[in-house]
Length: 304
Image (tube, rainbow, N blue to C red; front, side, top):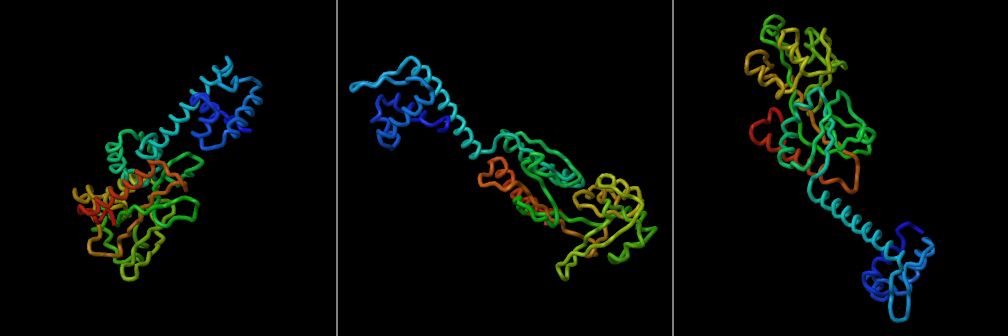
């Protein structure tokens, strides 16, 4: 017998005044209610109700027990109502894991706008260079890029951004401009530790992977950006990340060369759940809407 068994029936009997009335309220038989109360009294080892043919009265123990049971039932109703409310509108703490390489800057304005729009949600943003274990590290959601590994997680496509080759004007003038991915072997390429760059092949819709080399390695986009502006070599960086440097003449891209770009896809990844919390559901829907809006206001070079 469970700890709560019989208590709902007991509360209903006391509040309705009889076993018959309680049975009607609960939609069960009178004998079932009577049996549940008897089992409850046997489990507790006390008499809760005094039964006569004409009336039902509470014992002293029964009165004390009823007060506590009623309080527990009210707390349960409150908890249930709170959870229902949280499923209807976003509340609580949303823990996000973003990739530090470029992801934090890519998502920063979106996260800030979500916080402004839904002030009842407290947002914790954690930056990591690698992918996190959502369940083990208790994150609600992460944003990942490109092809996703098979997993039990749910992934929703958000959109993406374009990466472009860039270098300082002085570097291009001294070392020349590559005409194809293969030409990059003749250049100092500023890359992350895996030293691989990806490019679109517009004619075939395929992705071209190139192994590059150079004397500057970093996982941090800010370091690669600084090295590129210093004229050390070529970097492959997001268009939104280098826009200001290009506008100020510190960097130049390979205009008119379609091979020099790569469109990176972004995905919202979150644990598989039949009852997804409102805070996660609203945030994912918001991201899709936000990035789509950015695309439609003229930032197609950023959001593809």
